[in-house]
Length: 144
Image (cartoon, rainbow, N blue to C red; front, side, top):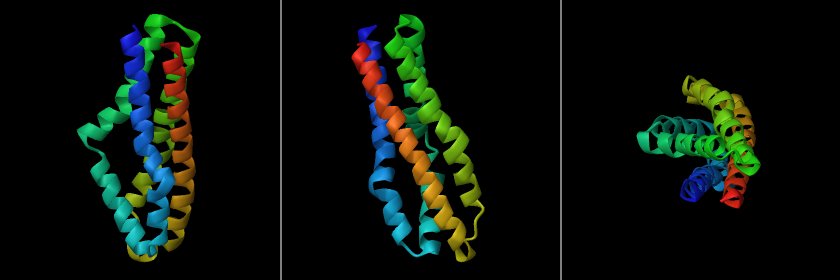
């Protein structure tokens, strides 16, 4: 059980690290580009992100954390699993993905206003994902 708990914690941390890069500098770098360039770049990133490697890295922590919570029944593990599933994965599904879908249909040549709003909202949601994932990793590690 300890090995599974540590694996879940590390998986949450790994996913959070990938998302942290966007909060720390990627979105700011894209926002500094001309709007049409930023839109095109993020459209390309979003299209390339849906790969087996990234989707596994994002969803596997949820499965592992839930397994630890169900099998162990410890309060810290349950809280960690809930934080990752609802905070990191849930925010992705309910917040970031719909924004990405809307951006996919945006014309880069005429979407400057929408781009500024996208960056603001997407980044705020991403901060939530990072915080939830890091907190989940900490709770799971503390449970090990």
